[in-house]
Image 1 (cartoon, rainbow, N blue to C red):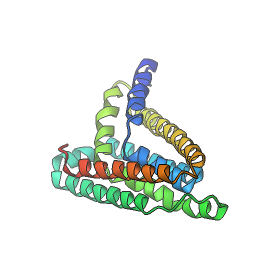
Image 2 (image 1 turned 90 degrees about the horizontal axis):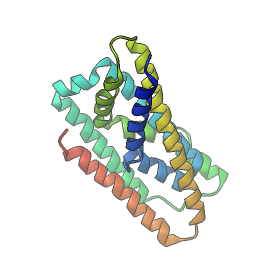
Image 3 (image 1 turned 180 degrees about the vertical axis):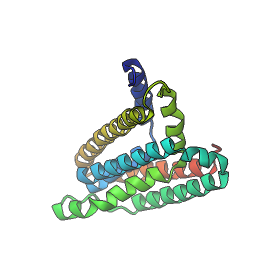
Amino acid sequence: MIALPDLLAFAAALTAVYLLPGPDMALVLSTSAFRGPRSGLMAALGLAISRTLHVTLSALGVAALFHAHPILFNCIRWLGAAYLLFLAWKILRAEKRAESKEANDAGAGWGAIRNGVMTNLLNPKALIFCAFLVPQFISTQHDLAVQYLILGATLVGLGFLFDAVYALMASSLAKHFSGAATVQKASKLVLSSVFGFAAIRLAFEDR
């Protein structure tokens, strides 16, 4: 088992990461603001699925494979950068937030989940992060599978909690400023810029 102080330290490290602005946060904010809270929560679910996959892949040693084969790492991160640029373009073209149930339902579901999965999954640095952080709290004196399960559940659960809060906050603010065209345009520029800068950083920053 994992000692409580170690688990709390792990949660504190994750909290610091989830509070930092990035493509995951921007995705949840933009999806919820332009498509409604249900879509924002679906995007958060997609991010949770991807983080689960990253924890699993890190446990299987895929991060070591990326380290041994830089070309594979680069291919994944360039695909991720292209997808982030695609999301930035979609935000700039987004129409005014639809209030009808039909429009909200149309933007929810698999599309939002897919965006969440792809945004995080195509970021190999998220996998490297999992592979770097999680083993620091693993003890070889205890069952490795149980420890990975506990730490992985903490990583995914805490991330979904933060994303859900961001989704609800963004939806509330969008409703409050629904009549302010200037605010809507500014939010599009800011959120699309976050995706754009994240894409550039992912594509060109050294590991």
